[in-house]
Image: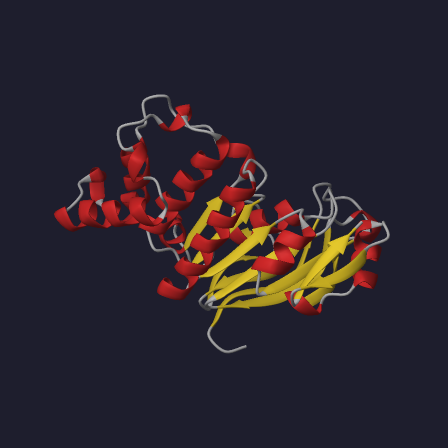
Length: 267
């Protein structure tokens, strides 16, 4: 794959290390992600979507396999960050977890977003150009009207945009999102993917995102990886995924209609 950024090689994982092969949450998972690509990870609850992101980020280590970012090893067969220090990992990977949106009560929006530069600035000493970049990011994320507001006073969707803006600040190579649209209404979902597309094009980074909504994934992701029973059932262009594989993966009958050149799946 040209411009390969992330390489997942033969990853297998179980939370019960003594479990047999039939207890593996992820079993021999391999795929690559190129620069300038939005990849949606789909599958029913418990199929290993969040676990996979945790392994790619380096937060947990797979029993087998290896994950490389830009050719450097994040983890390899039970060992952590072979080639990455924690600081280097923070510069290269942005991981936004759905279940960890706990923000200290004193954080104002602009200060929270500026924290994205912490891996690059000793002791939080920021430069004039940092503040200019902050203003630009807040406008791009439609957050300029929240200047001076406390982050924990905002809605779930607005907080998600704050998290995204903070990660854009550090210009990470790889964005990992775990169900980022779960707290967003339709308007903010559209804004999120519009911003993701813009960020991808401007910075050439990759976005790997777990998502439940099939239609949201098909219409906004360049590619879909579909997990089923610990394995990859489908890995390909989002607009080529079939009702048959979706029906199998979600254990429900899925049908499709085409409207104005767009596919809509029903289940």
